[in-house]
Amino acid sequence: IGQDFLPIALNDCVFMSSVNMRIDHNLRIGSHCLFAGNVELWDTDNHPLSPAKRHEQCEYIAHQGFIDSYQSEGGDITIGNDVWIGMDTTVLGGVTIGDGSVIAAGSIVTKSIPANVLAGGIPPKVIKSIT
Image (cartoon, rainbow, N blue to C red; front, top):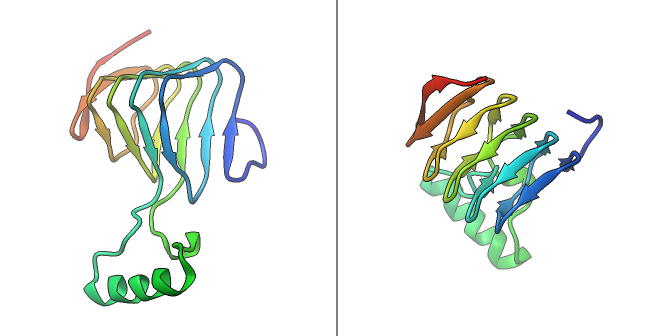
């Protein structure tokens, strides 16, 4: 998908309906993708699990007014070509959704999804192959 993109790359014919994004890493979206309403693309974990690191991060925010992307965990989101993401779905960092796949409404995608499947749930499971 594309080449040398930082941090957001959209190819042609991408249709989004009220998509909310927090991108601290890289987001790559292939061509001919459909995003239903209230989809969230969130590639960062925002806050560490460690109480000591959260304390340190709160001090940083108090003095700097923001979270530096380099302090955020998470990873890239890559969405292949011809993907449809259903309403009220969240896609988290470190995930790749393969070409031609459909993600059912209400899913929380925490792991990569192969190409040409219908997947859904929390976390999504492959429901069936599609062509």
